[in-house]
Picture 1 (cartoon, helix red, strand yellow):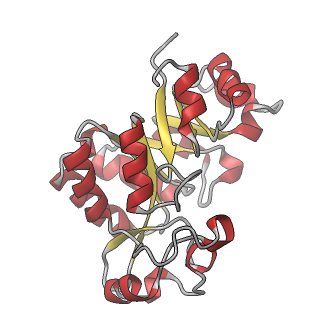
Picture 2 (cartoon, rainbow, N blue to C red):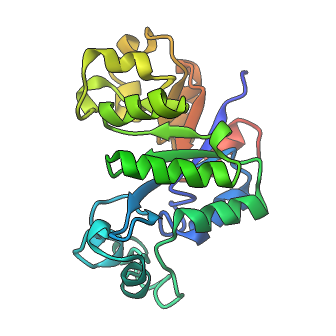
Length: 245
């Protein structure tokens, strides 16, 4: 069996609030090979980590990060994800982490970790500030850049020669046919892996990231279909099948 990279989705988000330092730290301690996270900018141009454009789902505040300063983000948003975890993580002092806080944690705990950096705010400025921090902490050369936006994929590849992973064209914004030429890897969700269109994307002969495989059956299907990297909300079943735990 080839060496398949295990990536924790938004950290270890099956058991901890997604895109929080406790979620990332749990994934690092579990022993994953990579962690995935999502980057936005605050109004004062600080890269911070959250999946959605607005904080409603995880923080119960219907505001966009780009409309808040970092101080406001830290003071008013508590990403305890009550709809999923109830009160379990409420009042623990959880805050939206900055990218720099995560990189500091990784440098201390797992300097060998690979990072799946999803650019969620589709601006060149977000890319530039994110790349600068990744280079400052020594993670740029081994990270993957993800984006559901063709213009951003091209920008990362042309300006920084970063390792880019895009998605099937019908999932992408600002996509033109030449954008596939800027992919180093391609990302396929489990519903695509299981569908009749999978061979179309397999035939592109790019390394394939498959997501999210959270049970043994899905893990084994990903292996059978030739995954190079598998993302999981709960990496334990994946790591057990691969003999990494």
